[in-house]
Amino acid sequence: MPERVKTDMGGATAALDYDAELMLRVKEGDGASFGLLLEKHRSPVVHFLYRMVQNHAVAEELAQEVFLRVYRSRSSYEPTARFTTWLFRIATHLALNSLRDGKNERLQERLDRDSAEMPARQVADSRPSVEQKMVYQARLEEVRQAVAALPEKQRAAVLMHKYEEMEYSQIARVLRCSESAVKSLLFRAYETLRARLAHMA
Amino acid sequence: MKCPIETRDSAEVLLAYCTRKLDAERTATLERHMEICPACREFASGQRAVWEALDAWEAAPVRLDFDRRLYRRIDREVSWWQLLVRPLRPTLVRQGLPIAAAACLVVVAGLLLERPASAPPAAEPQSAQVEAVQPDQVEHALDAMHMLGEFSYRVRGDAADSKM
Image 1 (cartoon, rainbow over the protein chains, first blue to last red):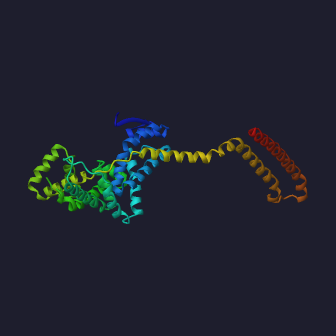
Image 2 (image 1 turned 180 degrees about the vertical axis):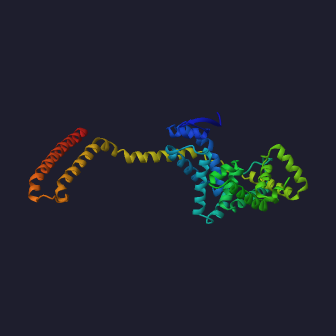
Image 3 (image 1 turned 135 degrees about the vertical axis):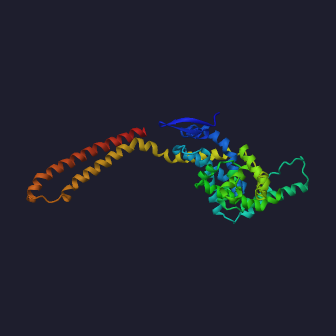
C-alpha cells in the first residue's frame, strides 16, 4: 500500500499520509480502518509511553486513553498534519500530565517494581549466566535512571528521535515548539546522557 | 570544515552521523575532520555509546488483551450515550413538536393579552381607546385559546394513539 497518496480536498490537492487516509475513513464510520490504525500504532505508542512514565501498567492505561481520544475525535478530525504527529501529541500530552500528577512520588517505586516486570533480554548465549543477567540488569537500570532524570520535554524529544525515528520538524510539531528549539533540546539531552552513559562503551 | 562542536546547529551533523543518517559525501567530510579533531571524535564515540545503551532498553510487549479492553471501553461509551438518548428519542419525535407548538401559542396568546398594559398611552382619550381596541384583542385571545384547545385535543389524541 502506498505510504503517501495525493488526495483532492475541496479543490486543493494535499498530500496525505496513508494513516490520515485511514482516519478519514474512520470519520466516515469505517470501524475496520480504526482497527488498522490500532494494529499499526499500538506498540509504538505503548512503548513510547512506557519509556516516558517507566511503568508498564500506567503506559498501557495511557495508551488506551490515547486511542479512545482518537476514536472520540473522529467526527472532527481534519488531516492538517501527519497522523503520527497528532497521535504522539496526544500521547505526549497525557504522559506529561501523568508525570506531573504523580511527579517524583512514585518514580523510584516504579523503577524498582518495573525492574522485575521487564522481560529478560535475549543475549547471544541462549542461557545467560547469572552474572551476565546481573550485569545486563545493572546497565539497563542505569539507562532507565539516566532517561528518567532528563527534564520531561527533553525526554520526550529523545524518545521520539531515538525510538520513533522522527524528524526534527515532526518532533517540533508534536511538542509545539520551533525546530531549533528541538535541536537544542536534543543536544542538551544527549549531552547529559553522554555524561552519564559514555562509560558503557 | 568548521568544527561541528563549536555551534549547536552544526552538532546535528554529528548526531546524524552517529545515527547513520548522514549522506555519504558529508560522512566522508566529517570523518576527515574527525581525524584531526579529538573533540568531535570524543563526541562521536560518546554518542555511539549512548545509542547502544538506549538500544538495549527494550520495552515489554503489549498485553494481548489491549484491543479487547479498548473496544470494551469504546462500546461502553457508545452504549452509555444510547442509554441516555433512547428513552427520550420517541418522546421527542412524537410529542416534542406538538408540545413546542403549543408552548409557542401560549406565549403568543400571553403577549396579546398583555399588550394593553404595556402599550404606551395614546394621545386620544382613554375611553375611546378602550372601545376601539379591546374588543379586537379579546377576539384574538379567544381565537388563540380556541386553537390551543384544538391543538391540545390533537396532542392527547396522538398520545393515545402512541400508547395503543
